[in-house]
Length: 101
Image 1: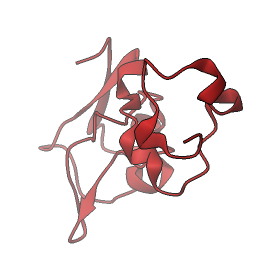
Image 2: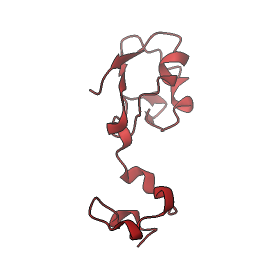
Image 3: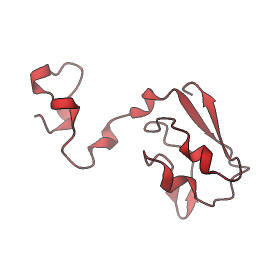
Image 4: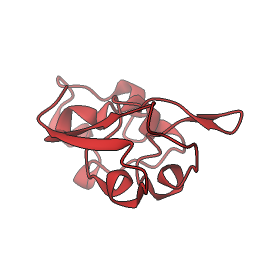
């Protein structure tokens, strides 16, 4: 139970949780919608994007999907709004907005 993240929810008794809510099974972070923790939201300005893809590898949450060599809009379910992507974008195609959108 303790390592099966799919069985942990708001009604799980505390003695069945992992210490520090550590996750031991691979690939389970996809099940956590951590985007709700965000206080700032990146906004993708597609018209300014030159598809240099400098933003994708610096995202610590892998929230910038790239398909067929082209970046898509953000995965807001997992983006925590750190703003690293906006800082590395040389074209101003990512703007940080205060709040969760």
